[in-house]
Length: 394
Image 1 (cartoon, rainbow, N blue to C red):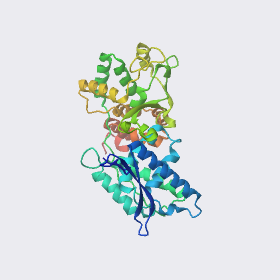
Image 2: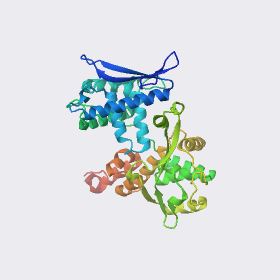
Image 3: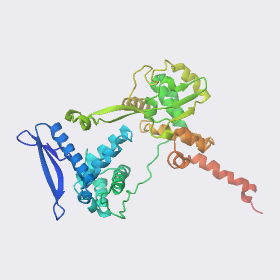
Image 4: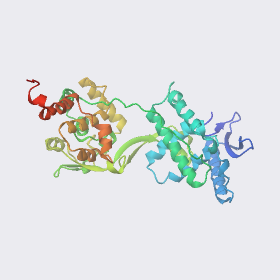
């Protein structure tokens, strides 16, 4: 069985065969070197060593033979260059994007042949046929992530001397504005009633997101040491997420290729590490569930609960409310909207949400209700002659 996007396959005689580009014919067609080993791990290790040696030789070549490199070579070089400078979750996400989508479609193409049309065709194919789990395509947002990775790799390549196309135009797929989920006041009251009745650590965590705007991974990572109850401050210092386990890429462990693992790391961005004032009406609730500093708020113990398991429990509670169509991020949207409805300062709200700038808050999370819009429109009465005359004219 071939390794998707790796050019490694198991032969009928039981040996593993790895194929690696070693040059190009005059017509631009790739020349391959074939490596045979007893195991997948040995074949991949030998292939990686050959690629690494090839890059070293090219670095020492005064004529710089990068001009003939395939995009696969650049992708490998770029990924090696960023490995120690990005979060593990980011590197894992890039690896999945490259190995599952970009290498199979564009990896064998010469870098100089990566025209705007070629990348445009790749984008179109991903939008219509890119889903590997079922028929159909991927969302514009997902494909935009693929395009960003291609752009980053080419920018790196241009700096390193690869013959990257000049004046290449790479367009992101057109994205429609997604429908934002926000609980109405009535739905929020109904949910709060159920949460107070449930009286569990899970319901407490949901209440924290509803009134402090935390992401699901941030809530799962909260420990009581992150709370200063006396000062009514909550510190967001870490986040939990499940990512593909790239151990196979480090030790060539074939069995771990499809496994995932939990990572507890710093929040999404630098701005996401923040401190949030706890509303005074929630302090009694915090004191009710408070336990040892090392304990997680969702479990009341030193064992964490991962986002996937927590989400299932969240959906179970939402079904009791008849609100199971709301995803977890709807709590964050609802929090931001309630703040705006209550004349919250946008700059303060932006910092509480952990955004780098106010425009992100306004564009993504602030969604005034029709009643609030009506209140604003009715304020025009104060400056209107028509309004001052109650709509009557002599």
